Length: 234
Image 1 (cartoon, rainbow, N blue to C red):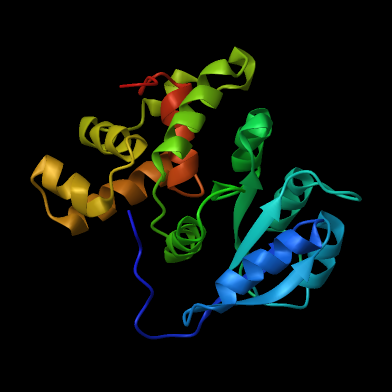
Image 2: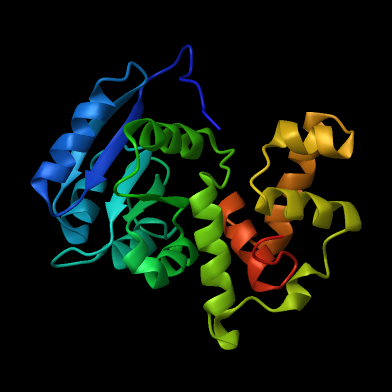
């Protein structure tokens, strides 16, 4: 799914956190070429990023995992901590990763990241990820991301998984919505599937997130897999 750039409003403020300067330069070139977003901060490790973010307002952070001083997992956990002092609201975090770091991705999402992006993803995919996360109506895309989350949720040790009882508070319709969310369906697509208004779907999604204690759709989808509500390949 492609998220179109917003027609009006201030540009999306992006921070790049990666210890490789060439990687940051490449991402910055692509991001700054867009009329609706701009890179406002760059950092070479998690500790530096946290220091800079206390005095800079940022909407979305692209965060590498393996970095010196402080890695992306620790930085994400601190950055999304509601008690951490910073300017403005907590930014959304998108983890930059590769498939050989699968085991760390779920940890990052649990730490508060709103999603993740493969480092070798096409530029348009990166831009879509930034817009999607910033919109607050994130979906699990592309399909490789859904497959990876499904894999991670099933290989986790049982003691690290969310208990199935966490779903007890959901109504039957809310469970249906969560299943469709896990399959990567957008609100409009869910509305079509269930023959209801999109506004009704938004209400259901909000209730699902609240009942599961999920920060966003990504965390809710992880819970759906962990509890067995959705199985890989379903």
